[in-house]
Amino acid sequence: MSGYCPPPVLVQTWLMLINLSSSDEARDHAKRMINRNFGSVDLAITYLEQSQSDNMLVKVGM
Image (cartoon, rainbow, N blue to C red):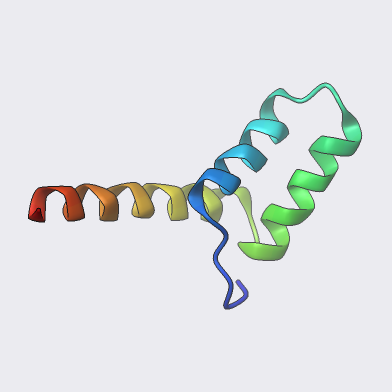
């Protein structure tokens, strides 16, 4: 994984494109971006889960 972590909403978009897009080009681009930033879809999903749990902790602490 590179030092840059894309915003969670962008990662969600890439995952949605992989699963739902009828365009091969869009699906392939989303896979490339996931692999470039995380190495695998599983790691991207873990990143989203952690970012959601981090957000919950911030809200509870307010």
